[in-house]
Amino acid sequence: MASPPVDIPAKLEIDELLERNRAYAASTHKSLPPLMNILGGDAKKNGPHIVVVSCLDSRANPYEVLGFKPYEIICIRNVSGRVTPALIDIATLDAFFHINQIIVLHHTNCGVTHLTPERGLNDLLSKCPDLTPKQAQYAKELSPIRSDDDNWLKADLKILRETPYLRKEIAESAVGLYLDVKTGLVREVNDRTLI
Ligand SMILES: [Zn+2]
Image (cartoon, rainbow, N blue to C red):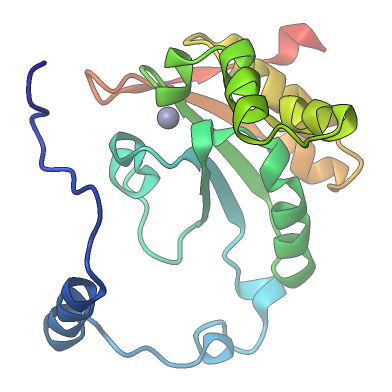
C-alpha cells in the first residue's frame, strides 16, 4: 500500500506536546484582555453573532475557506458538520451572545462518506455489545455518516428550521454551503424546495 503523502503520527508523547506548546507561547501567542473587556462588557450587543457548523476535517477549515477573522464567527466543528450535535451548543451560545446567523459547511470527500450507517452501527455493536436497543437506536440517530451529496445538507437545514431549541429568527437565517475540496470553491445549497 502506498505511503500517505503527509506525516500522520500514530501517537504523540506529552513531552513533545509540551515542547511544541512552549514554542507557541514564546513565538506566536498574543495575550488578550479578558473576554468581557474584548466584548465591551456587552456580549449580546458586541457579539460574535455568526455560528459556523463545519466538519472537523483539516481540508474544511472555515477560517481558511471563507476568510473569517478570529472573533468574527463562533466555529463549531464535529464529524461531518452535522447540526444535530450542535443544537444545544448554539442555544447556549444564544443565551450569552445574540446569534443572528448559522452557516453550515459540508464538504466533498468527507471521511464519513466512506462508511455506511450499517457498518458504523455494526462496528459499534461489536465493540460495545452491552448496548441496549434504545442506546443503539440513539447512536444510530446521532450518527454523522452521510453520502457525498447535497441531501444531507438540506436535511440539516430542515433540522435547524424545525428544531424547538432555537429561536425562529436564527433557524430562518441558516444557510448551507458545500465545499469542493479539490477546487476550494463553495456553493450555496438551498433547502427551500423541501419546505
Ligand atoms: Zn468531513
